[in-house]
Image (cartoon, rainbow, N blue to C red; front, side, top):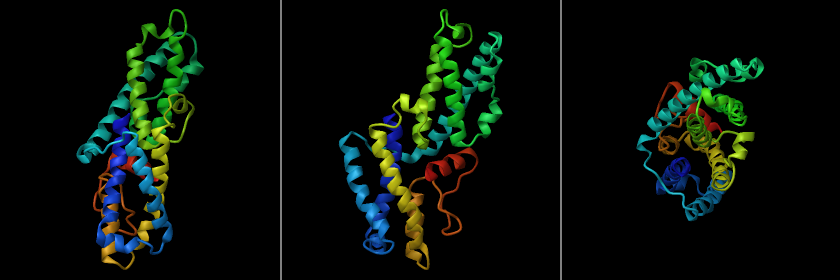
Length: 247
């Protein structure tokens, strides 16, 4: 979990380092839009607070590949669990409950990032109670280990997307402690992301500033109608990037 938090923390630090370069700092410090400067001033104590709580920077060189692998692993585990839970419920005469987990692998593969989180929660919430009966209904269909593997992957994916709080997420403590601080940091950077675009208008230096601000994050995008992107991806990673940046 701390590796996931550290990844997002490092991404934000990369953009902050760009803003602190003297050439770029002269563009924004105490200059319109002033809300950008105000957000930057609030960002620094939050970063300091996260550091005191043990959050550390990570090597981002493999982030896109790690994100892709995380999603692939999550899809695979969720599909395995969903089909097993579906068959268990059907054979127990519970077709209405079975519908909650009746999902094809292709549906998970094509799902937008937040939709995949929602599918994961539905599958996990439906499958988990099957362990509670005596004897457990799930015993002949899937194991605790298989369930836990899917649950851990779902938690990691939920955190790295900054997905909206859910009932399961709250029970798992995915929106407390360090994540509360990280969420506050995300909100401030979201403000900067929206306002920084103004510096690119009629300014080559400003355009470089904006491109580097986004580009240092490896997989996020600069809005193409205002600034030429310097890093492009496609497929599901592009969807994750959009969700990550928009949340």
